[in-house]
Image 1 (cartoon, rainbow, N blue to C red):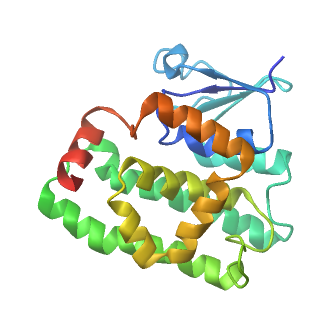
Image 2 (image 1 turned 30 degrees about the vertical axis):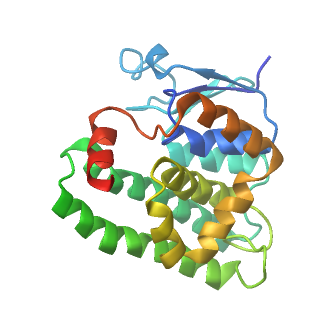
Length: 229
């Protein structure tokens, strides 16, 4: 029997945050379509969540919703959290920052579609600041030596989240790779190191062959491609 069931669409977006960690630790999991729960059953599951991803832990028969909560749970389960209490807090903060970036890059989860002027203002100001924020965090805590991680010398859930955020972003929108290199060169290198870890590399190769440059789908992605392309 699988250890977990992950319910999400066939897109990387928020799903990859959980999948990259499950892959890296060689957890046994099944991927299920989000439609098996969302929207009709989303309020009926134990520990209900408003929207995917949903992570079902088979051994405890427990559902987890909200990407940051799922990652923190897996981080504890697989010892992917820093050892000190401050590190736990920073790991959670990093994942919550990722969630904020996802909300912002989709213009408040699609509340409005991007226009070129508003996108450029976001890209060269707010998004650049986000990139520098991750870079500064790494320089303060983990990038002091070549090959370091975001919060220290050992990989943590914060590194998985950072790679899922920026690695996915620049794969789907290669033009943004220049932005990341300019604003956060050490983060760009971190993403490359995480993506070349054996299990993650195999997973991403399969996913990218199947889905191409797909990101979040629908009108939101169409809007992004129009203003970036």
